[in-house]
Length: 191
Image 1 (cartoon, rainbow, N blue to C red):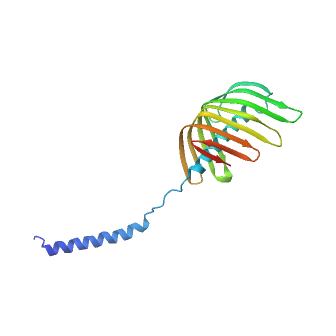
Image 2: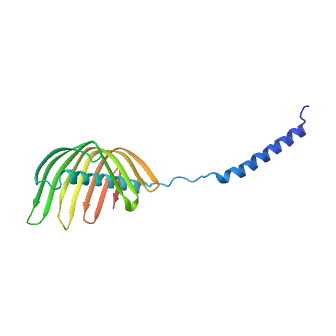
């Protein structure tokens, strides 16, 4: 039996009502929330912190506690890769000041750092040459770091926020007793 236009109209209306009813049942259960945003400033501050923490780890694992004088060693990175460290260190026992003029030639050098106080995990692979120059004692720190072209690849995760980084950047940092400031990927950050 063929459908009349009146029957067809009723069928379309009933179908529409069923579709609308189904949407009212389904839509409240769908989530439109986005993942928390990891701002550029926070992200690159965390990346700079990861680089600096990695360089301190490399220094502490390979230079700290060794006699002052010329340095020329090849060592493993904290989590892989290599680092060729050259330059000089000195210590003035009269005033307790340690001085460094070092270059870290990083080749696929993996560094990884965690800060439990801020739920921060940074895992990076570094390529390039970073210079470290400055002095410190028991009462102060004044160190500068620079690289004309530091390759940085990896990720940073802070709580539920996560971002990847991959690229090369000029890198500068200044570490003092009161904090650290850095420039990378066109941004200035400090902590």
